[in-house]
Length: 115
Image (cartoon, rainbow, N blue to C red; front, side, top):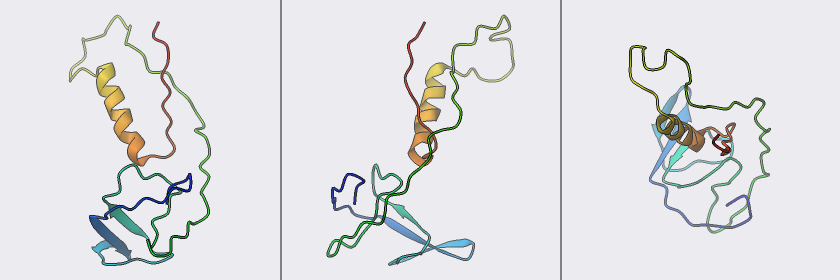
């Protein structure tokens, strides 16, 4: 059940149920169970996996806005390119941030004007 109230049928490809400190494959889960679910694209915090016969949404969870902001720009240091190791390009940084957005609900990335 989406945040906007839409009910969407999806197929769960894997369900892992937490037992103690271990995750074990499971067939079902209920309220209060800590699980990991695979196979639901674009799910976000606050959306409820529910029984298709009786879909009841849980109350929405509010996540506070990010507490800090930073601007990432091109390295203009006189020592640019003189260090050992691989180069970190803006494209690589953006790709990494985009992949972090998938599982980290505390991040928000805003585009900025390039000078």
